[in-house]
Image (cartoon, rainbow, N blue to C red; front, top):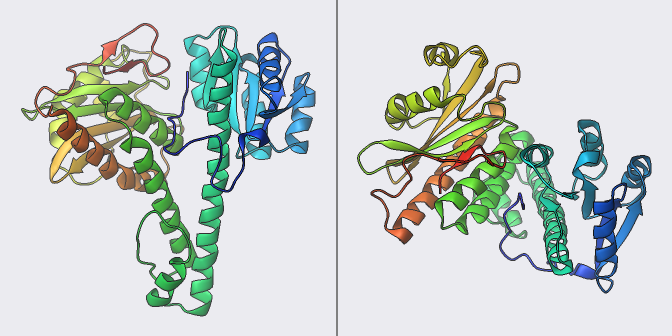
Length: 383
């Protein structure tokens, strides 16, 4: 199960000339499944350089000593403390899980800790090489993006110090590759950094979802990206029908399975979506607790839940409404609203493109998300 969509232009050679023969893989070979995968990679005609740690303690030491593109580790070996160590010591490495078999809990853990792929069961050498190569390429491209953003920030700071004007800013920025056009306002450095970060984020999100011409793939890719920005949360996406009605297109289960909150989801669909679709702004429910209590979800569901609603408009029409909700113990940060506001129009634009391509404006979306036992941590997703 691959948790990150393939980026356009991915190949075995990055733009700065790093070839596949230079891919560095750090393997925690404390279990048979990772040891077997390491052997397959080592036999791949020098395509990969594998550093093998025999146990967790040796693996921790290697995190500090060796830089790598991919970390290959068994799902059962990963806990929150080790995840923190990996992200702190190898922030650009792509983590790939391995296991003899995989269940819903394993997949949920992989998504929560940010693993980009899960190698389960018996795989051919070709499959292993291809998926490890994609993970390595993601790491390389991540480094390249951060280098570009660092150069943009440096230019922005130099512009403030030297010219302080919009005209000088535009001339200097023209020296660096940029994916979006914007006007630099000569305000504070923090404003410049925020604007640059938002431009990079929007460009990355647009690149990811433009390749999706299927409802399920589009929603999956969009929500995967959004949840990285918002942190763990429950989320529901309702898609507009042709008669001013809405239908549940996708549901992400963080700690509230869809069946548990079914009455609430139905009320959101029937009552909230039509009203929220008329709003232009991202909304935060101040009375979410009262609303949830009225849904009578039972004693297992706390009413101390924070909820955010995100109408997605394109060309004056609301094509989707997203709801994000989680416990007030871990409330949404203020920056989440800004992130959602920046990305929602891009999602709506791609939905409009999908409608045009498939000519499915009416009766385009499933009436309800499919109900499956094996929900891969998403609980339900429309087909």
